Length: 89
Image (cartoon, rainbow, N blue to C red; front, side, top):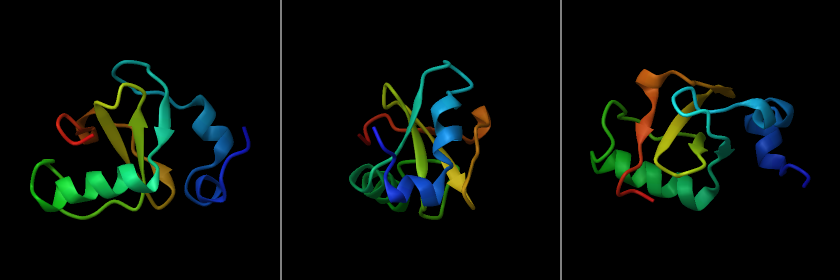
């Protein structure tokens, strides 16, 4: 499957292929627009802690339970920065 142009702009597609969740080792995928909108709505409503600004991009774990922010095109894969998506997706 060819990466979308959005993926090319946000995260290098070759990097995205090898990244995994540091906690579970599950694969990560770039959040699509609908998923990112739901995450940002939850942030705005205060349902996702430790974040107070909308995300431009995020990597979502395969099981949909955690997301990692992407800042300036770089995925932040620190367990302490993982965002719980329980009840969001």
